[in-house]
Length: 471
Image (cartoon, rainbow, N blue to C red; front, side, top):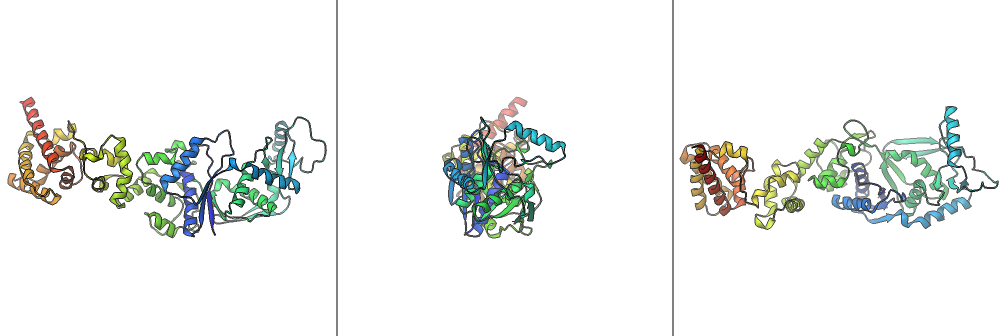
């Protein structure tokens, strides 16, 4: 069975690059009926925080990237790592290194002076003398001295690394805690990971990890290294390019499936298709069509993708994600129509859920004033007759449906011998308080008959007051 994993470090928030890695790993497992494992790599005790762990878990939950096992925490597996390290020591595949920081620095400076690549020179690899006093040793892995590591990368193709390029890496610090490369290897082995899909910034770790796996007699997973995501200035995507955390996109009103859709297309393609449901992503995803070059994050394209999903989503689905934004703004949903009906009406103009909320309050809340620019343009004395007559028509409308409301507006325009806009625009400002809204007949239907009549009378009173002030 195929088993993939996502293994973030909780030293910061779950960011876009991490989410894309998680998505590709999740999709690959789901596509092949496999399992997806979540692992929290929290061995950096100084920088790992509970807040970051919570942000990772919350982000994964919001995105719907469910995991079959986990979360596993590396800090709970230290005994296992020590067991493996001891095995390597006992079998002459690792050794204690007593080189001090000062000694290592001098070694590197000498190598640089000779034009050599700075690297550990193996001076304690075969050491049999008396250990120097006062030095807490690290433990290094005995990397093979000959041959090469061949990585059949599922994205980059064949990658060959000579073992002579690799030095003896540290697998346990002087305090006994395991290093990243050791703990990752043990975890992937113990958890039966068959496919490691991760950013290509890890590619230089892969030959080292393969050599440790070989030393342990463990199966070697297949690797797929995904090129990084760049900002629009061509540098690596970071917080200065916008969102720090994936949860910021939640706060900005993006749908989770839209963000996933955008990210899956950021480095992968399926023909010319741009918009994917989650089920379609699972059906079509493969590693063969992952680009081998970096991708550029474009906020405008993300907004467009979000807009497409807002337009296509079932109204009930939209309402579910819209409701928290409404409540945060203090809008009481029981004071108006079904939120799904409002969402359905507002979706055409909105790029984000935040934009939808900004145009939704008048369905639930009465207002005491009109948008100044809209009122100045449309609530003039010349509009009074249209509002008086449309109010008369509205009072007789039964049942209160968009079709009947439209007919009443049309009859008002015909009787006054004016265009529909001469009735519709003052009416829009009267019942919404602003100059823009969805179709006025559908809007009026949702606002309700009594509320519409009250607001029209409020607008007529506003016109009268304005005429007195100008008179």
